[in-house]
Image (cartoon, rainbow, N blue to C red; front, side):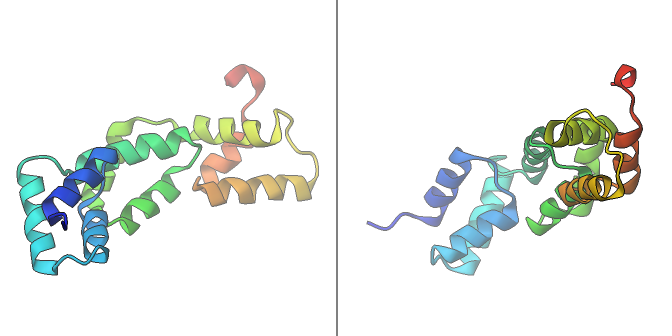
Length: 149
């Protein structure tokens, strides 16, 4: 017996939060009609089973805990179809000190020592940039002394 689009969507949401865009993609990939998918997602939003705000909050917390910066998290949320105003609102509400996080990520990966040669410093900067930290956050991660952490 084939599962309904609504039941499938609820099972996806039972595993983790999904953005409306992600949910639509998964349901479309599963072979459900686009009109039906749209209707199901609208019903889930109305019953508050699906919320892009809740998804964004959860995603930001999860990615920051894994050592990713605001730039990358922002980009990934956009890729998942979350509206820019929701992203901005949730990033502000998260109250994450991105400067401290950049420093912690750098120290965890490369150790406490500040690199003394250009090549090592550039490697660490590229790593932090890839992780989604801004230039200012990366620069500051090298300037923090032991007593400031």
